[in-house]
Image (cartoon, rainbow, N blue to C red; front, side):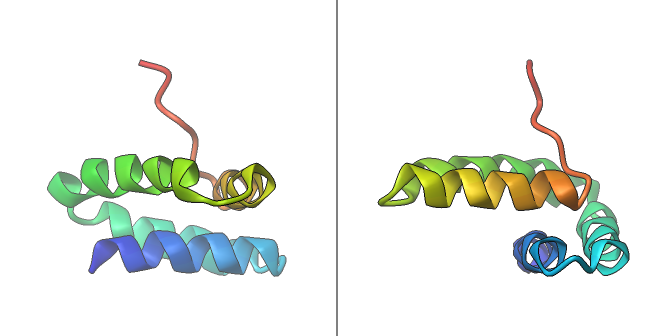
Length: 72
C-alpha cells in the first residue's frame, strides 16, 4: 500500500532521518494515480486526530519529509 510509505516517511522525518523519509515519499510517488489519493488521505487524516496537537505533529512530520499541502 502506497499510503504506508507516507506514514513511514512521517515517522522517519520526526526521528530526524530526513533522507530516508524523502526516499519513502519517492516510493509513494512512483504510482502517480495512487499518489494523489495518498496525499489527500494523508492530510484528511489530520482531522481524525482526537487532539489537534497530534494532527499538527503529523503535518509537521510530513513537511519535514518534503510533503506540502495542495493549496488548490
